[in-house]
Image (cartoon, rainbow, N blue to C red):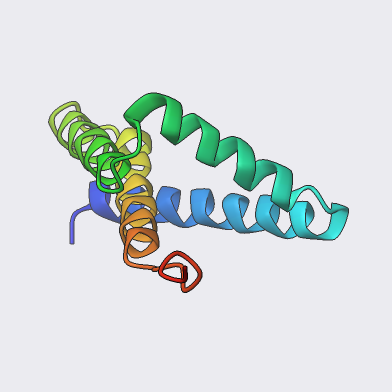
Length: 105
């Protein structure tokens, strides 16, 4: 594996660790629900009510970051693209969840 990808995976790991630290801090301080509501409002304002639109936006962003990072040989941009790919997968998994109370009359 080339040094570029080794460095990029290290950067992606650092970004993931920072995200987990932020998530843990949000849970401990009780701000997680506020953050989740703001995130939902952001995606609804950006993409409307389509469930697959945030995934498409994140996939295009990840593809752009990965291609840019690879062509300019920058491990930070490439690592950010790899981290965005993981976040895109999490958003995709979120679209598969069905609310059991939506189908009740």
